[in-house]
View (cartoon, rainbow, N blue to C red):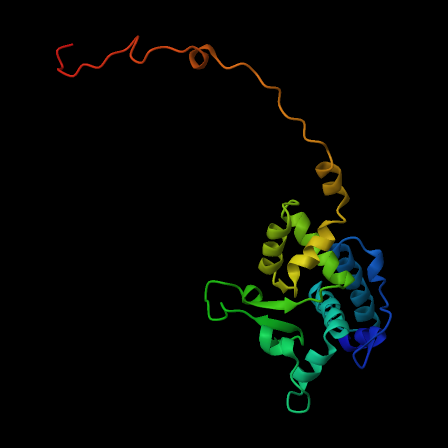
Length: 215
């Protein structure tokens, strides 16, 4: 069923209009929910099993990667017949069991981290699905900025080449942050110092030190 749905949107790695209007969604969760409903409809028609949102997420990520990384997919599928792209060696890319491109990180042998955190899914820098995922991570970290959003992205199992630029571009269009950050900063009124800090007195005028211990 995944191949049937993918054939509507991609032909030989070339971009084609998707059956789901991705550009009309404002959040990744809504896009995932609608895609899942499409899968459920096809599963009922084809009398096949339906696996919640997992297949829908794989479809969306495959759609993104086949549109943005066709050369990398061709090489990873048949490495002996295609020339190795520079990004494959630089990011140590590989295909997982679902056919998604992942980047093998330096913590690949760590037993304390999840598989998704050690091997990030590669996302295209300029793609509507990437934008929705960045917005979703930005909301999860409570609009804390670029650094926190990048950390949330990697913790969620995603890697975006030149991620800081991609995140900054998405964050610049946040209407909520624009509204709050555009407010003028009004400094606090200067108040008078308290009397103990304003009076000049001789040291030890009211206190003394007992060096001998008789007092």
